[in-house]
Length: 180
Image (cartoon, rainbow, N blue to C red):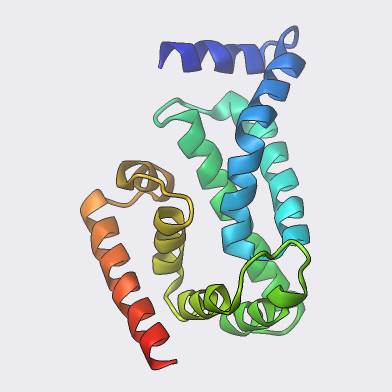
C-alpha cells in the first residue's frame, strides 16, 4: 500500500508524471482493454473506451482518496465508461441495450480480432440475456479471473451478493447452452 501511495505521488508530481504514467499504461493497458472488451465486445469500441478511461484516470487522479486500490478505482472507471458508451451507442442507434448487444454479437464473427468459435458465440449470446449486473460479475469472474474481493471493490457490492449473482448467472447460462 505504501508502494502504491508513492507511485500515486509520482503520477501527481509534474516532474515524474510522464514517466509514472508510462508505467501505469504499461501495467494496466492490457488488462483494462480486456475488461472493456468483455463489456463492449467490439475491438474498435474497446480502444475508444480505453482511451477515455485513461483520460479520466489522468484527469481525476488528484481526487483519488485511496479508499480502494488504484487497480480497483481504474477498473471502476473503465466499467462505468464502457457501460456509458454502450448506453449512448444504443440511444444513438435507436436500439435497446439488449438489441445493441444482439447486433454486436451477430457482428463478432466479422471482427478480425475475435478469435472465438461457435461455442464462444453461444456463450456470448447466453451472457447477453443476463441482467447487466450479472453480466458484469460473470465476465469479471469467468473471463478475467478476478477474485470476488476485487470485484466487490470495483462494483461496490458485497462478496456474498457477488457469489449469489455469479451462481445465478452460471445456472442461466448452462440452461441456455443446453437448450440451444
